[in-house]
Amino acid sequence: MRHLMNPLDFSVEELDRLFDLANKIEKNPAEYAHVCDGKILATCFYEPSTRTRLSFESAMTKLGGRVIGFADANSSSAAKGESVSDTIRVISCYADICAMRHPKEGAPMVASEKSRIPVINAGDGGHYHPTQTLTDLLTIRSLKGHLDGFTIGLCGDLKFGRTVHSLINALVRYPGTKFIFISPEELKVPDYITEMLREKNVPYEEVIRLENVMPQLDMLYMTRVQKERFFNEEDYVRLKDFYVLDTAKMELAREDMLVLHPLPRVNEISVEVDDDPRAAYFRQAQYGVYVRMALIMTLLGLAS
Ligand code: CP
Image (tube, rainbow, N blue to C red; front, side, top):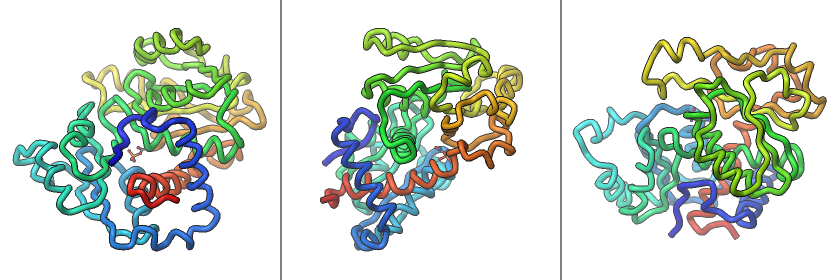
């Protein structure tokens, strides 16, 4: 039995197989409509979500399976004090696979240690969001044809952003990757990440002004300043609109640059950018369904 806790849990070769399967599902979804007949996915979400929970539910439904779960810790027995370990022991009696989101770093890992079914980390605090990373990598590979040799700008909340931490960890395995970190001083990428990049000789720059680096980028990964991760409302209000990607800034970018965003967005991408052919964030959300279908099949041993 296998879990997914961290984007590095799959080798590069395993990821290639997963993405090949996701692209086959995209081309011919009808062929996969009964692969999970009789199987049940539990979505245990202790923190709000639109994309991750509903794309998992959509993925399992499109595979012919069924879904149970909760979307709010307060509607589960967590509100009565039940531990994640006890909850997963019980969920193991009801479902074949579980996707879990939790505000505490490591909670899905604790669950996986007591689970009799595969557990997927659907986001744990500011730590990792591996299925968003799979979505990001599939989007890049599908739209660009490969994953190596890109200069990628990551912009916004690089301190608390679990999607950013997961994506950096995953992209360092592809040769020729260069990172440009664009953030205010207070939201810089954590030291453990820059130390890891130095150890691996992966080039990176840290800058504050987005405009200065736009022409260099193959991809711009925008992120939201996350209100829920701030301890202090004043700091959030001061930093929330630090970056706004608009059409004037897009004019500085290459013709083939992709704009990605894990979503939800607030103000960091102006809606006028949505019509730019380089804006790929809604296509990215669609790829999230295909990659989660491929992941469910793989973890249930149903991928041939
Ligand atoms: N990208 C993402 O994780 O979105 P949700 O929080 O809506 O699941």
